[in-house]
Length: 448
Image (cartoon, rainbow, N blue to C red):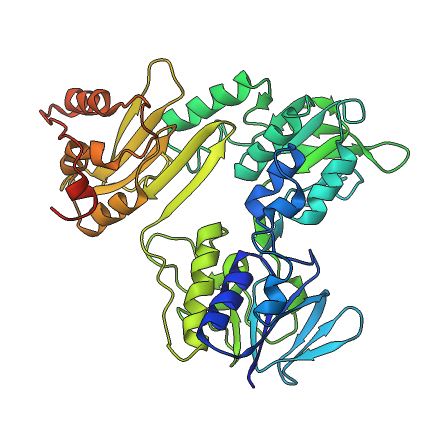
């Protein structure tokens, strides 16, 4: 019986295992040193905040794995030995494979800051990081202030977690506005306001220079490039992630920033594949980055590779870009491409609408010459993913999207709607006379 060994029990590896089992009777082993069972990484914050217990973020009962004949090995892989078709674990044992899939995810970036390895300095990615934060910042008596370094999604999650326990937070962001390498200016400025309204000390255009140690080897303060020293008990390093691939050096597997793979998710070595955050496409797919540390792309890679390994060779094709997140209590979704001013294409035109009082806004990107709809960012308004996917496939115009925007609204019943105000602003900005159509379930369900 063919033996498929998967290193890593995150969303990529576990999705792969589940779909292989649906399609075949192959022997499956998952190796992970992080946790005994798969858990939802995106829900770690809610455990710290008291909304859930850790067992609540495990999607499957513990007997699921035995029932589905998926063997779990709690161990750390030190080496991959392709010539022997084995992996070597830190406890000295070896596991043979017929097919190997590497799904080891990411690790927090460290940029050589003095003091970055002190006690009290940590990331927020793994179960171990959650346990560390519980020790380092159980309350505001032990942790009188935390400093978070890096203005991405993990940084704002960590800030929200700490504020839930009334721990003062200083947020160091090297950009001139929060996440403005990704978000257009209007959205980024709104999030700046929102962060400060949550009593988080947001320091923009500020870099970490050094972390100072106390006499016991614990962080006691940070020094910024502005010459300011900020006393703290915890330093959160959330300046992005990098593929977790150090153990593959000298393995013969081709590496770049991640593990180099083709569209079939194959490495340069026969019978070895890579999926998820650690995989790097030789050539980027469309406007996507070669490495995408995103939950849903990891899941899609697992689903795709399962087809290939079970006799149905399938190229990885993630389709149109989409993502979702939360900025404290503002929900964010993006469909298609809406680039920041720093990364905007020369053909890209933006329309921005913001509510005069509430933290609600949208930005629509479209081609300035053809008016083809390119993408939308929405904050605080829920919109239907499948409709925007369809409109992108159909290459609809921005006028068509605005005319049918009521179809896309996915907010619960009795929520206030804003399509009239949005379309009115577009008409004013672009000298148009678009009139929104009434919502139609025939169109939504593609029956019209």
